[in-house]
Length: 299
Image 1 (cartoon, rainbow, N blue to C red):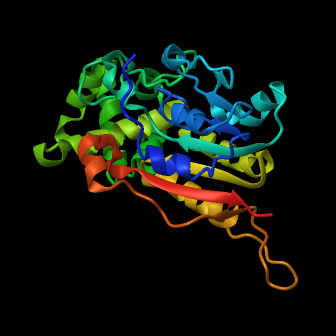
Image 2: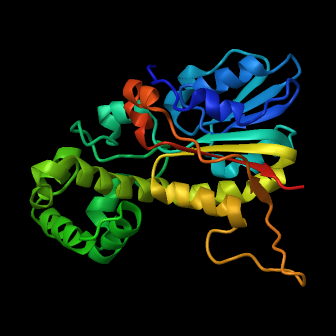
């Protein structure tokens, strides 16, 4: 199964400061690119766990005694590592968002380029697909997700149009959705606006921001002293959560100060924000919006 080159491969794995005998987790296994790089730096007693809920990823399994693939959503990272007898790890890598492979599979419904069923489920066993979101959500609920997850200013008008159009005819494919919303898609910005609409629906279908929050909250308890967290995000909603969590340990509000005015935060950032160079963006278009943030356990 063809998967594209992983983004910021060297930088994100360097960020883990790998110890030969360490235990590491790649929570977004996908095509296995990051995992292979981690394994290449581990000694015989090192261990790597991969997480991926997409059945397609199972076809890329790495035959290596040091590697275990867990076919689950990484929101359950602590539970499944415990099941494998692991309480603490030396490093965790996350390459968020949808893989290029998922975008390229027309029948998964992730891409605005192909006509496919409105699906967008990363886990094919999930009950709610994009078809349910577009076909059954109330106008108010649709407007909310388009505004919050797609950052669309005219979310109310788009939601109203979806509800009106689906009363005339079911909206079940990518191109039917595109056609229904044609008046909001002037040529110059058609791709950008469609991408925002698809992003909003995809985030809702896969609970992506909730998953990310649940995952991040577990990392301080999972990492060993000086353990590293390396996270690549692709849009501002994800990046904001990662940045805020590293800075404050929270997603909203500010951490409480102690008697001396100090704040207790679990993580500490390592280095500056890393983005791909022009050469990488030219070779891999998906890299253009990538941001890598690195943190270590503060102890």
